[in-house]
Image (cartoon, rainbow over all chains, first blue to last red; front, side):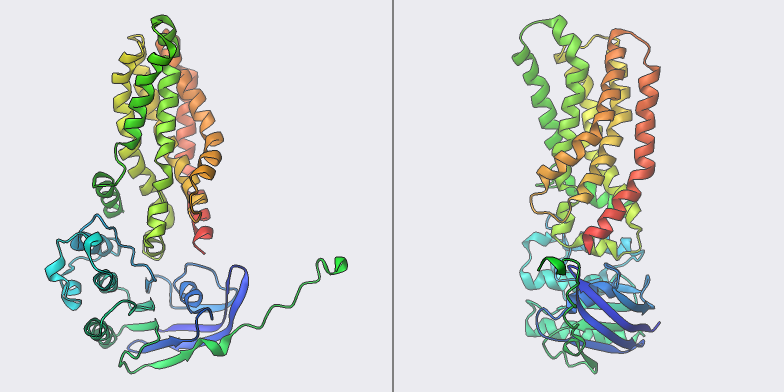
Length: 204
Length: 218
């Protein structure tokens, strides 16, 4: 399923941040989203994930297809690694978490409480959640934060395997993952400052 | 959905989950009332249904601010909103889990605590029935309040203020059933109204909760 974005405008806190964003994300391909801090990458990704409505434009092929990984991993500190992952697998109607644990080298930690993991291990657990969703389009926001070099390689391998199975990925990141991917620079779509509305102009 | 219910129950029972908070508060309130009112068993018997209902309501209120806020803070609410579960289903399950961990223990503890307040014998059945019918409404209305205040830091105060007036009808009719039951009067009218409030809240409020949650997640 191709994710098609046409002339999309997104807003944060009522102010438009990006406008005229258009791209296609075909099965088997990845798209890297770059741009300076505050340009609206997260806002764009949240809109594509369906967490907020777009200001204008269309998103096609995202409904029930997207797995979203945000800045925070949504882990419960009192549940074990396996319990956290099993929960997300059953929410998405999948079963079997071993492949996901293997992909991010978490088997040895499976009975450890998630609250006792290091930051990098938590992130690996958060990323392994993508593997148990069974969704074809991965939308990821800064997935490599707090990962070491080995874990970044693990992540890149997981994305490559996902693309190989006909999935696709949209990743906002600043580091080079070594993937063959197009780059989308969010800076090119920066919204113009909105014209001041004249509502209280008479008082000024 | 079942997975979400079991996760919430498991979380409530593990360390720091807050299970027993409402129950302990209920226990403290009802144990303290006889001390503050003094040794007048007729007066205690008269106010027992109202005190038990008020205690249960406040105990319920105490645990509301954790209901959605914890999932909001660690990001699972965003992830749940992108999951295949409809948000209406998610908030219903959350309310159900809240009722099982808070409301149900209160219902079961109330007859025991009724003894401390010298509740007349014929009142026990109707106290139990009124709490069993009324506490689900408290959980569902509370979930709506929690959804309204989910993005706010320390939203507990605002949550209590918002939810209190919505709790009043349930309190009036619930306590009225328990009072009439204790005095041996007919309970049918307040009982039906209480059941109506619960049924309407359970049927309608999950849609409102999901709608405000969608707005708050933006």
